[in-house]
Amino acid sequence: MHHGRLSTIVIDCYTDDLVAATKFWSHAPGKSIAQADQGCDGKYAELQTAADEHIITSAEGGSRQSHSPEHRSR
Image 1 (cartoon, rainbow, N blue to C red):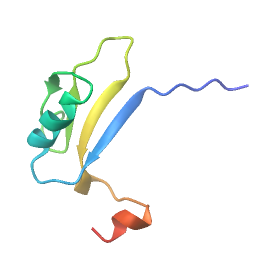
Image 2 (image 1 turned 180 degrees about the vertical axis):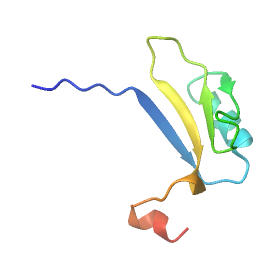
Image 3 (image 1 turned 90 degrees about the vertical axis):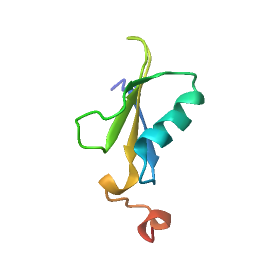
Image 4 (image 1 turned 60 degrees about the vertical axis):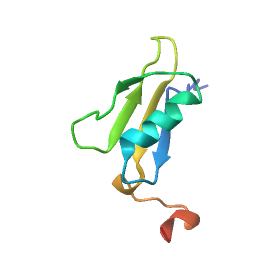
C-alpha cells in the first residue's frame, strides 16, 4: 500500500501584487516570508517553515491555468 504524504500547501492568489498577498497570507499561520520572489519571476513566494513542517507557497493566480469551472471565467 502506498503511503503518500502532503508536503506542500500552495495558496493561489488572484492578484497583481503577490508581495502584498503573501504578507496577508503569512499572518494566518503566523509565519514570516522566506522568499518574496522565489525564482525571480514574480509568480511564487515562500513562507518560512521549519524542516519538519509543510512547505507553504503563494502563487500568482494567472501563472497557472485553472481547470475548475469557477476559475475559468476570471
